[in-house]
Image (cartoon, rainbow, N blue to C red; front, side, top):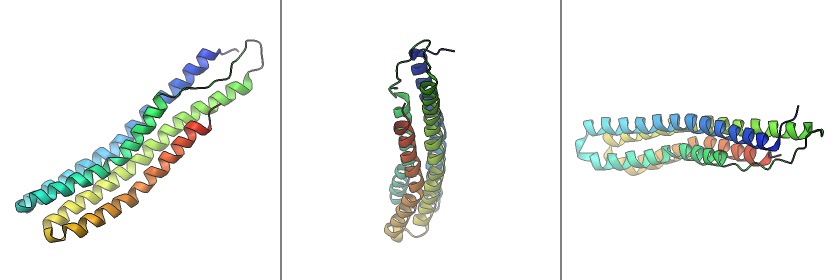
Length: 181
């Protein structure tokens, strides 16, 4: 069976598109939930303490901005997957091309895996960041004079939760670039 060069390039690009879709699809869910959760905390806090609505809005926006980071990692990975430029060795009809086919198949699987890796790596941290943002907004409503220490604690907690999305991003980049045929 002979698969020509153009078909192999198309299959690699198709794998990149599939990986990108899964990456951004899963990656957006966690951050979206987290952003909404942080907003819920701010709304609850404003209902409890309308006089500190400005501080609560600032806390909410900072918490939501950090919560968006895993989705940004997923977006960057998805863009890389969409615009991958496959360097496929030339294949000739009648020649033994099985090694080329095996390398291309491995790269296709790696591209899909990169999308899955980053998509799931963004899912959990987005939710975790939102939980921290939600709690921070409610805490500011209870004790507005402690906003500074609450904000610092929220940001440290969010940074720690983000670490797994950074790991997923690094693995995705390795899968994209270190498995090319």
